[in-house]
Structure formats: structure tokens, C-alpha cells
Image 1 (tube, rainbow, N blue to C red):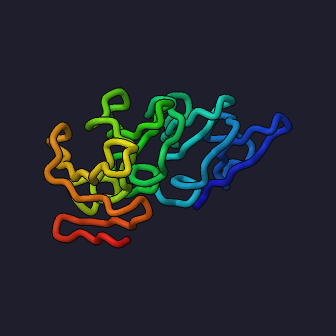
Image 2 (cartoon, rainbow, N blue to C red):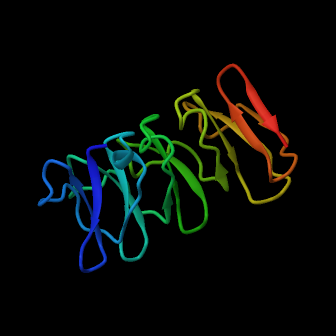
Length: 174
């Protein structure tokens, strides 16, 4: 990547382009994640403010975030250059998927967990989620155009499973 992070005397970080080391391309933040712009994966990056709330910025607009401020934002999807979607976690410990152009409207329900495969990493138009913290809660598979009703459900064998799918297959290991 042509970008790097520097820290100032106030212990804050900013992103700089290698050809302009005197003017940051981002604001000064309490933390900047390395995924995305800094790894050359996309033109997006995630920052944290003083309260350790996270948001996403595009490199060409350092004054206006493209997402709301969240407890956590996964780097999968938009920031890693895989799709136009990202997963955010709210302060109720729930996750939802957002499209980069619609930061205030999740594309579906809030879930206990959302897998970073399928719609998120652009391998499918489906996404998988666990609706509740209950150990018997199934893994629900949703089509991105019908987020309210799962397409199908899979029994969750235990909480330590690896799960991956595309439109043509699912890998389900415990």
C-alpha cells in the first residue's frame, strides 16, 4: 500500500500517503485498523474515537464517515474489498449487515452472530446468522432480498464449529 499510519504527541493516529508525508489524508483518531486502505485491500478504513466507538471512512472523504458509530465493525466485506456490505455490532451485543450506501438501515434482522461468508465476502447472495445466544438456536440462512424469513435452517451442533458456504455447497464441520 502507498499509505501508512503515524502517531502524534497526543497519542492519536492518522493515515498519510507516502508522497505527501506532511498532510494526513485522514483525521486524527484514537485507533485506526490496519485492514482495508492500509493493506491495499480497498479505499476504506475503520477508525475508533475516544470512546472506542468505530466507524468507516472512504479515503477521499475524511470528514464524513460512511457508517454510523458502532461498538465494533468487522473488517470482512467492504473494508477488505470483498463486497459492498459490512457487519456492525451494537451495544446490545447484536450484529447486523449494512450496505455502504445505507448506513442507517440494516439489510435484515439483528442477530447474535453473523458469519462473514456468502454475501459479506461476495461468494453468494446468501448469508448465515445465529438469531439468539441460546445454545439450541439454529443457524439460519437468508437470501439477501428476503431478510425477514430464513430460506432454511441448520441445526447448530455446538458453539465451536466452522461453517462456510457458497450458492452451490455448504461446509459444516465440528
